[in-house]
Image (cartoon, rainbow, N blue to C red):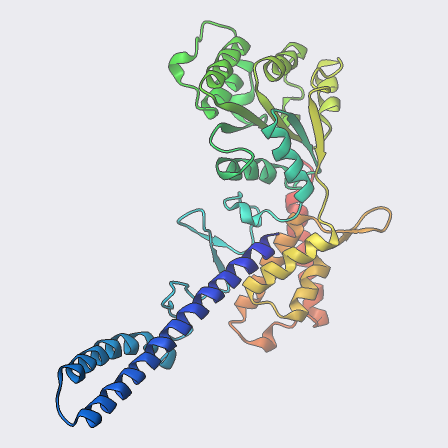
Length: 389
C-alpha cells in the first residue's frame, strides 16, 4: 500500500512537471512569434509606427519571461541540487519523514515507530482495529515476542487524528503494564488518566482508583471525546497481586458502561492471562475481539524488500539475498518472514555496503565467505533481541 501511495505521488509530480514544461515551451514559441510579427510589421510599414513600437515592447517583455522559463530546460540543475519544483534528490541512506522535522533511517530496527508509512503489511489487522475503535469496540492484539504489537498500538495513535473513521474526537492513550508506574492499581490509574489528558483538578484522590478512572472517562465523554486506552505488554500484570478479578471487572464496566475503549497487546491470549492472574474466568472475554499478529506473508515481505531496497540502492542480487536472509521456517517446514528480522537484515546489508564506500568488489552477496560471515553475524544479532527473558 505504501509503495502504491508513493507511486501515485510520483505520478502526480510528473504530471505537474510536464505541464510546467509545456507552458515554458509555449512561452518561448510565443516570444519567437512576437519577434517575427514585429519584423514583418517593420518591413511592411517601412517606418516606425505605434503598432511596431507596441509589438516590440510586447516582444521584449515576453522574451524576458520566456528566457526565465526556458532556462531550466536548456541548463538543467545538477542531480544533487534541488529542482525548481522543490523536490530534492533522494538520499540512499536516509528517508525524510513527512510527519516530522527529523530525518528517519531507512531501516527501523529496534526503533520506535515515528511515521505511519513505515508500518508495512498487516492490512487486515489494521482495518479490524480501526473499525472496532471507531465503533467503540475493544480489541486484544496477540502475537509472539517482537512481532510488532507495540508498533500497531503506536500506528493507531499516529493515524487517529486524521483518519476518516476516527479524528480529533478520539483520544488515544498508551500505557505499559510492565512500566514501573503500573506496579499498583493506584499508580496505573493515575498514569492512564495522565495519558488520556484528564485535567488533574477533576481527579478526586480521596476516591478509590477505579472510581477516579470512571470519573475521568465520564468527563471526557461529556466533552465529546471517546477515550481509547492501549495497554501494552498486558502480560506484565501477571503475578501482581493488586490486579485482581475486581480490577478486571472494573475495566469491563468502564468499557461497557462508561464508553472506554480498551486495546490490549500481549504474547498470550487475554483469557489465559486473566485466568492465570485471578484464578477466575476472564470478565473481558465477551467485549473484546482478538487480533492475532502473524509474521509477514511472502507478498508482504516482497513489498517491504522492494520498497526498502529502492531507497537503500540495493541491486537485484542484493534484493534476492535480502529476501532470502529474512526468511525462517516453522516446525512444518513452511517459510515465514518476521518483520524485525527483515529490518535487521536490511540494516546489516546497508552497513556492509556503505563500509566499502562504493567499491563493488568489496561487497559481493554471492560470495560464499561473505554469506557465511553474514549469516553468523545475523543469527547472533537476531537472537540477542528475540531471546526470551
